[in-house]
Image (cartoon, rainbow, N blue to C red):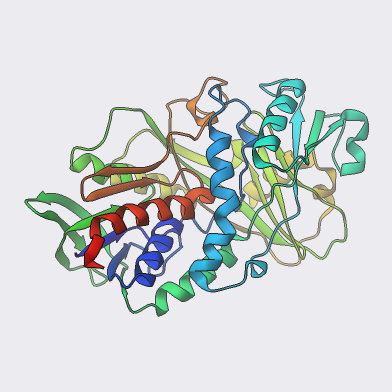
Length: 397
C-alpha cells in the first residue's frame, strides 16, 4: 500500500516513525525544508492535564488532555530510542486567578480537584491571596492561585530529537519543501498535486493518505467533501522566548480564565512568555490557503520590540520579578497557528475555545484526518492512526 502523510509536525512525524518501525514505507510531505518547523516548534510545550479548561461546560476536555499528556514522554522515548529522562521538564505550573476572571476562585478550585483526581496526582494546593507573595505572585491582582504538578517539555528539544530520527530513517521518504495544491479522489486511492522544491508541478497517487496538516487540514478535507459545517477559528499567536542569568525565582504561571497569558520557566534561565491580547496578531474563520498565508505573513510586519515590552509589562502585573529581568541576549519572537472549533474568542465565556474534546482521528475510508487539537495529544492521536492503518494492512505487513 502506498501511504502519504501530509504534515511533518509532531503528529505526522510520530505516525511516520511508528509505521517505519513496522517496516512500512511512507511519503512525508511538508512545505518547510525540515520537519517540526511550524506550531509544533513555536508553542509553550505544555503537557496539559486540563486545569486551564475550567470553563468547559461538558467537563470532557481534561479527560483527553490527561490521556495524551501522561503518555507523551513515553511515546517520544519509544519513537526516538532516547531515555525518558532525556526530555527536559519545566518548573511545575501555578494557575493564578485574576480578579476579573470569568470564573470564581471557588469554581476553579473545584474543577482543579476533579482534574487532580482523574490524573491520580492528588497534588493540587490552593493558595489564597495572603500567601501569593511567597509564590512570587502579586496578591493585589489575584483572587488566589493553585499549585499543580503540570509541566512543559521544551518544544525545541523535542523537535531536534524527532528531526534527527525522521531524517535518518530510510523508510520515510522526505517530500520536504513541497507545497500541496490539490487532492482528488480516485477509484482506488487519491491523487496529490504539489509544487516541489524547485517549484515544478508534480503528481503522486496513494492508496491511503493521512492528513496531519495543521492550518490547512480542513481545506483539503473540504476538497474531498469530508468537512462538516462547524465554524472554525484560526488564530496566529506569537511568543517571546529568552534566556537570562538572573537568579530571581519566577514560577511557571498560567492565568485563568480569560484572555490572559503564560510564563514558562524551562529551567537553566530559559523562559517562554505569551500575553494573549498582544501576541495574538490575527484571526480568520476561513480555511482558504491564501487567507491563511496572509494571516501568517502578519508576523513580518509586527513591531517585535513593542511586543516584547508589552508582553513583559502585562505579565509583570501578576509576576513582578519579570519586570526586573536582564536578557543575556535579545529575546526571540516567533509563533504559529492555533486552529480550533468555534466562532468567538476566549473573551467570550461561552466560546467553544474553552474546550478541546472535539478533536482526534477522523476516518473516511482510506483518507484519515487528524485534528491534533493540542501539542500534548499529538503522539496519542498518531498511535490511534497507526492502530487503524495496521488493521487495514493486516497480513500485508
